[in-house]
Image (cartoon, rainbow, N blue to C red):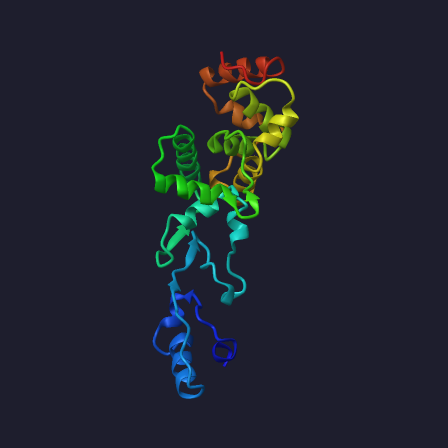
Amino acid sequence: MRWSYEQVDFEPAGEDHAAPGRSYMVGSQIIREVYSDSAPYFIPYAFVGMSGRSKMSSSTGASATPRAALDILEPPMVRWLYVRKHPSQKFNIDFGQEVIRLYDEWDAFEVKVSAGNASPSEQKIYDSCVRTSFGAVNKSKIPVSFRLLSSAADITQGKVEQIVRIAADQANVSGDLGQFQAAIEPRLTCAIHWATQYLPEDERAHIRDRFSGEAYEQLDEVSKKGLEILSAQLDENWTWSG
């Protein structure tokens, strides 16, 4: 009835709607026999999944949404995952260690584009990822390694000040760390979310809040000596690696 009344010409939907006995197939028969009209042009799209999660579908109500992907991926990267796939292609967004590889791929892609080595099609894909008709898509101005940020987030239990300090040291950045922090967002927040909310417990670093004499006594003499050297140097320079 809606198709006929509103004269709908085009309506995409999930691929399951076009299966025999499902909504599009049944609706096509009803509109023809009851309303003497024709069904709109239909393009089916495949579903996007998340590792260990339901498909991203509005009909299931409690399933994962793109908002969850934005917890761990910069907005252009989410667009990148979609734009390089045909609507009929299924794909998954992995919330595990694959996230690190995905960031590495995206960073390499950006370097290729900025160096002028991208093909016309790659340039078009990139432009679609970083800009919309409303303007630029939010992304980090300084693409600090996600591997570094997530590792720092893990060992510091998500403490922003310490993560920024570690990242700035590795990037040889001095001066106003507040400006540096702003320049590595939203990647910084994504790394914290991933390390503290999505990384499995058995893959996280669990930092003790007090010295464990029992664990210390189980170490060999070389390890004990190493800890003593580290402890003596920590207060002077947290990034000491001599």
